[in-house]
Length: 106
Image 1: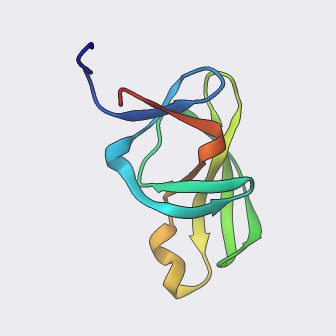
Image 2: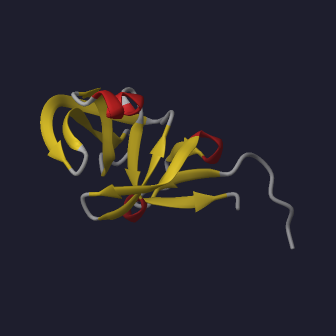
């Protein structure tokens, strides 16, 4: 069996572009539009779309969709602003849906 070299990370499920590091996972207990999602402190090789207000399960948030910078596939969204004080910890963080990402170097 070959030894794994490099960090554990997540890639776009369509083109395998690296989009997040496993070390940047904050929580695995989030819900995306299409099922389970992870909250990440950082994301890479992405494009952030225009901001919009969206009513989510935890209240009204200003979010921006996040796309893969390579294939332009939708990965999730970035929390730009939270209206509820208890949700402010999400600001500047990224939701990547499990449906759209795959594990690499595990």
